[in-house]
Picture 1 (cartoon, one colour):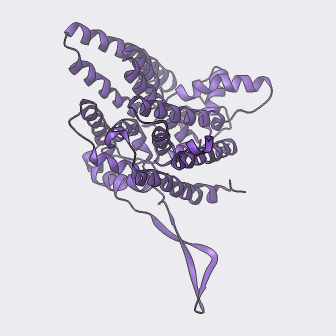
Picture 2: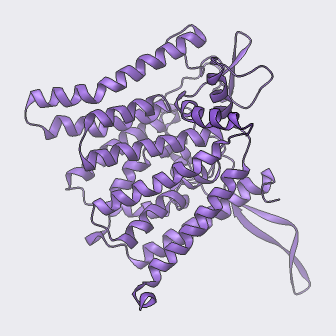
Length: 406
């Protein structure tokens, strides 16, 4: 009787959920390099804002004979209690230990948000699985190096803000969440547009608008002050994060933002295809001929968003008449324009990881794209196949080159 009540499609997604989360925890445990946030957390515990002498890794900023980290301090602060606790037992904490639970938290938030919009439990699992493993987020889920660790925290905080908005519209708590985003990844603060516009156009009374805006911006203002002081203590300049002091990816004389980057980034984000390579020392014999075995892999700088996240093609069927859709779409487009005008498209990646800044709002759009809150079987199959294909790209792009398969 119990087995008769289980739908095959639900059993299918449950199996893949277990498999992918097991794989996630495995890779998160094994990756123990590019852990700048972890080392910075230890420095914070030692009362220092710079890396210890003798430590060096990619993207560190050299200033006055000391190395600093150019990204926000909050991820290192999050790690501090775990590093401290493990130090008591002479153990080493790794970023991946926490990143697994961050990804699990993102899955739970996606599931709860889908349930809020009246999706069934099964469909909510598919949607949450799609975000975590059948989208550009998959690389961050599997690979807890510092760049992706910070982005995972950012995505978790963005979904937290959205969930608070849907559940209670507590603008002070949303402001607290965005204050932490500001201390993690400045570009993602543009998501604040969603909540500001909602306050302005939803409330009829000016008094209420001012009250909610003050509640929203108060914690963000405090975080901004902390960030300014953090910058000044390190570099003697309130506005210097380290990007301008040392940046290998920005050619001298080029601006950080310019319309000149727009078309190149547009191509990289949405139109760039896959590379084809051939297995070494592996052949197929056909009529006496030795044929090399081809396989697909992501380009060095990543591939199209819609190749890695095809479920989001359903966004083109969304109903623009709904207020939440227009609000989410406007926020998504503003963040996208900002990213398209930025000088850099993300570097080493599988899909365009910078689009994670807008993906939680695109997820809201996705939830409004399915009629009657039902995910068709084709979409479910697409989600599973996409996750498996992304896993293939990850194995080829990361595991083969890093030796983690050994």
